[in-house]
Image 1: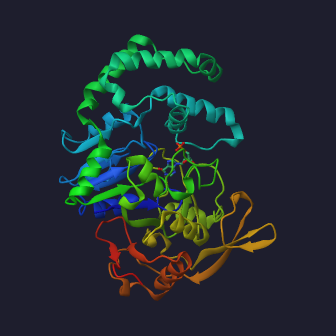
Image 2: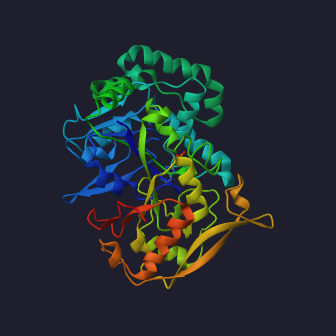
Image 3: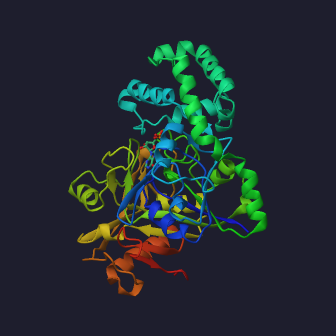
Amino acid sequence: MRADLIVGIQWGDEGKGKVVDLLAQEYEIVCRYQGGHNAGHTIVVDGRTIALHLIPSGILNPQALNIIGNGVVLSPQALIQEMEQFDDLRGRLLISDKAHLIFSYHEEIDRAKERLRGKNAIGTTGRGIGPAYADKVSRQGHRVGELRDVARLHEKILDYFATNEAYFKALGVEPPKPQALRAELERYQEALAPFIADVTGYLWEALREGKRPILLEGAQGTMLDIDHGTYPYVTSSNTIAAGACTGLGLAPRDIGRTIGIAKAYCTRVGNGPFPTEELGPEGERLRQQGHEFGTTTGRPRRCGWFDAVAARYACRLNGCDEVALMKLDVLDGFERVRICVAYRYRGEEIDYLPSDLEEVEPVYIELEGWDRVRGIRDYQALPPQARAYIDRIEALIQTPITIISTSPDRRDTILRKEGP
Ligand code: IMP
C-alpha cells in the first residue's frame, strides 16, 4: 500500500482544507509533514467553527488517527490551545519524538529579524518558523522527545542561551527566567507526553499491513518551498511532495496518488514576487469575492490571475497525478478572465520559471467570463465559458483537473474521477 498526498501548487491558501476535509472521510490516518502553526484553516462543522493550525484535518473524522511528523516545527503552546477544542485526543493523535520544538523566543527572534530587515522584510507569520528550522539545521534545536526528561531539556535550553548570549543581546531577545521555563516545560510534558511516539515506525507498520488508507497533508504551497519557491520570500521547509519523505521518514516509493490543489486564480500573503498580481479594482474584487484574508494572521491577501506557468512547474515538481481547482465561483460575474501562459523575461518570452521571478512580466490570454457557477455540482451544468476556462488550464498545466469546487460547502464539489 502507498500513502496519498495533497499539496498546494501555488503560494498556499489554495483551499486544501476543503479537499482534505472531503477526503479525510476516506482515510484512516492523516499526517502533517512540514511547517508549523504558520498554516491554518477554519472548518465549520455542525455550526461550530474549528481552527486548525497544527493538528491534521483528519481530526474531524472520529475514525481517523492524526500524525504530526518529524518535519514539523511544533509550538507546544499553540498545539495545547488547539487540542482544547476537542475532547480527549488520546488514541487519535501521535506526535513524532523527532519534531522540533518552537518556543516563545523563536517567535521573538522571528519578529526582531523582520523589524531589522525593514523594507526587505519577508512578511512572515511571526510564528517563529524560520528561527526554529534554523536551530534545527544548525544542530542546536530541541526535539519533542526531549520533553520526556524535563530536567535535562531545561539544562540544555539554558546552555543554548549561554552559548548564544551575544546573538540574543544584539536582537534584544531576553533569555527565559529559569524557574518559569522549568514550569513551562513541565506543563508541556504533562499535556503532550501521552502523544509522543515513533511515528515513522508506526507508519511503516501501517503501510506493511495495508489496511488503513493514509493521507499526507502538505501545508503552505509549492511556491513557498525553501528550495524551489521564490527564495528568499518563502517559508523555511520543503513544502513540496518530496518533503513528505523527509518529514515523516517515508521512501519515495511509499507515495501513491498525488493531488495538487490550486485556486482558480492566485493569491499570496507576505512579500516577494507575484507575477500575476492585480493591484487595481480587479484584484480588490477577487479579494472581496474570495474573502481573501489570512486565517492565521488576518492579513489581506494579494490577489491576481491564474498563473499556468507556475502551476505547470509545481505539477512537475510534485508529480501531481491530478489537480483540484478550488473557488471557481469567486470568478463569477467577471466579464473576462485571464490566464498567464508565459513570462516576458529580459526581452524574451519564456514558459518556465527563472530563479529571479521578480524580473518577469506575465503574458496573458483572455477568455470570456461567466455569470454564475456557485453551487453547481455537475460538470456538464457549468456554463460553457467556465468549462472552456477549466479545459484551457488543464491543457496548460498538463495535468487532469479532477475536482472542481464551486462554494465552501463540502457538497458543492464536482468530481471528474475519470479525468478529461
Ligand atoms: P513563515 O512561514 O512564517 O516564516 O513565513 C514565510 C512566508 O510564508 C510569508 O510570506 C508567509 O506569509 C508565508 N506563509 C507561511 N505560512 C503560510 C500559509 O499557511 N499560507 C500562506 N502563506 C504562508
